[in-house]
Length: 413
Image (cartoon, rainbow, N blue to C red; front, side, top):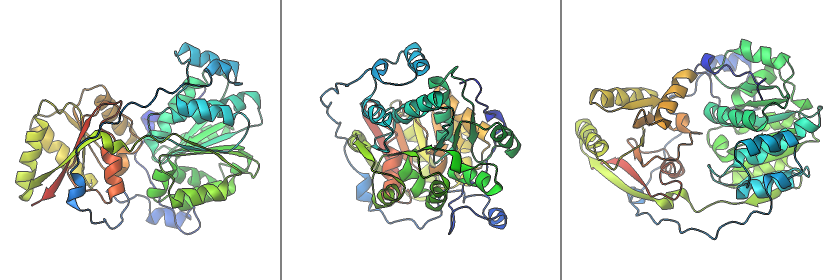
């Protein structure tokens, strides 16, 4: 999809909004809430019994091998997409792709419950892009909770829809409005973005959602956890009634279920949720007295030969910056990401981490959402997470691909 216009190098940190009352905010409200608090959602932290941070890994035994019903060549999708998939070596779909695409090409709404890393992006992107190619009057909207995830989806769509003559726009916080306005004037067939920035364009009148007949919401549970419920509802309310909807989530709690029930039409549920990611992670605590001892203990842990690649979570942007600088001063190859970083800085730090040019990535919760790095050996909670759900989400980044991971949480004596 070479006509995609994505000025990643021009991105800078911008607003992430939690939404108020009716969804999108007025200009005066935007001035007052132009930046989310540095630690992410500014909610009161829940007390978590430290005993819950101690647990031995119980590696998930290999389930019976999934036997797919289809190959990609079997699906009634665009021949151009089939060719692109074949050139990338994709012959057999993953379970979520196998079951989702078969239903999606019939036009039905989909609820997909699946973990990160199961191929869910292609599960909704393939049928959406195929329909765009077949029907020039169709338009698709994809909504993701974070800039990083929106960009990952955009990159995947480019590969799947390469040379198909489609033009798209990426609307994420921190990107120059002028470039996004330029792209929107070209009437893109596919728009990918975060709730806040999509809402900005709806308010300005530069994005008319009524003409979109397909919508996909990825990581719905995280989107709602981050406070985007009103923004998401406002977006869905603006879309045309005659549409196909995809809702993908790792969990299906009451909030997610309520949203889906309101904005879907007889959806088909495809549930391929694996065992909880934390089951594959050895969990323990690190007790300390005072800041100096805390830093020294972290230093000792990071010197262990078994610690190959690690994410260290801290609470605020300032703490993340300070901790990363201290680690670099102690001789570690460390980077950091948080909401105050420009998009280019965040992307470069993440790429260095993926390529093993840096061993340690210090991050806030919000900045780390949407990051999919499969070979992380350790997660260290230098600050206690706000909730146990956040804890599970953090440590689930270790122990992927059938490997046993490790999680350490610092607590005071």
